[in-house]
Image (cartoon, rainbow, N blue to C red; front, side, top):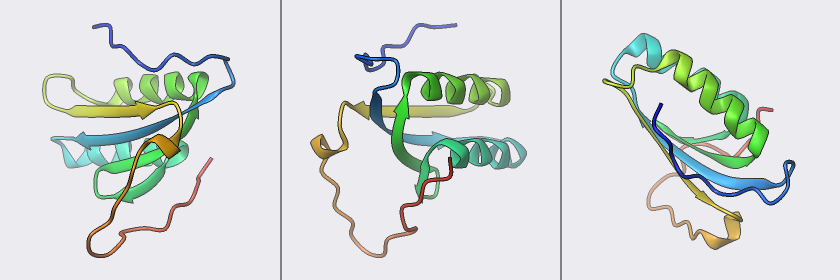
Length: 103
């Protein structure tokens, strides 16, 4: 498995703000991936989630996703920041979904 650099969590229970975007080639895998994301993060738009995760939560999410996706066909990108306030957000048009937490 390739090594990827992720935010350093200063404490095991500290949270990092993540934005996840994905492109899943199979409709069956897409449904499974979306269900996994909904347990950990907030759905904001088709193939996009955001939310605060601890180091443990992020690792569990990543492991669950790795069991579903095909690395040669699917793509998941995580953007991260130590705090959500460091990321500006502007919406043009309608907001697809109210922010809710499913944990």
